[in-house]
Image (cartoon, rainbow, N blue to C red; front, side):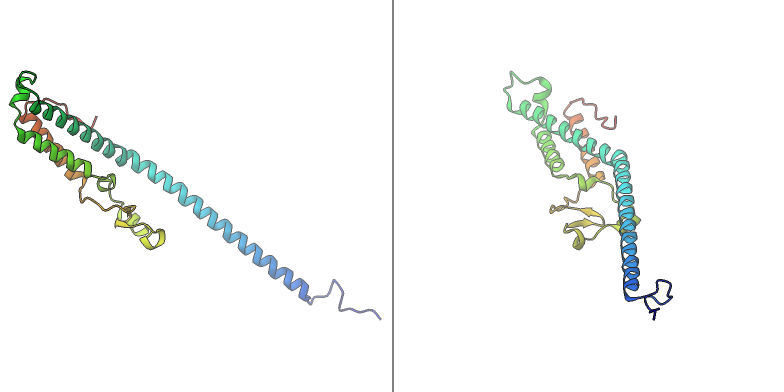
Amino acid sequence: MHDTDDSPWDDAPTAATTHAEAEWTRLSSHFQNAGYRDGITAGKEGALQEGFDAGFARAGAPRGRELGLLRGLASASLLHLSRGSRGSHAQASAAQRAVPATSTALVREIVDALAAVRFADIAPAPPPEEAEHAHGAAEDGMDRDGPGQASVGLRSTGMSIEDVRELRARLEAVLREAGIKVDLDLDA
């Protein structure tokens, strides 16, 4: 007699067929999920790079340039003023001799304050919707100064871009009083 249980046309699946279908379903689901995750990751990276490029061009570079130029100008002014107050009266110009020591001290305070400013202090804060999506300190191991701001182990000086601009105004006033003419158009 012929055994009909082993017929390939039989509607009842065997254990091997059921196992193969389950394995196929599992692999298909696994690779579909992996592809989905890879697509999400690639999309986030692309959006992150676009956001970085736009933020850097709009705020990062101009603010960094402003801070750098202001630091350089303040340091050069301090050097100029301190040389005038240290030099002999024969070597110093009349304008340098007329500069009071308080001007040098004020410029030194401004230089010290500007030296303490970190870029993270003057960088614009992320919009609220971005801050909500920022990774927490527990997830990435970084300390945070505020929502979405990584401090990388450093603490904020508490300075803001407005504070830096106030230091700029103070420097302008001190240099004006000292009779030093400097073009402080740092926005160019």
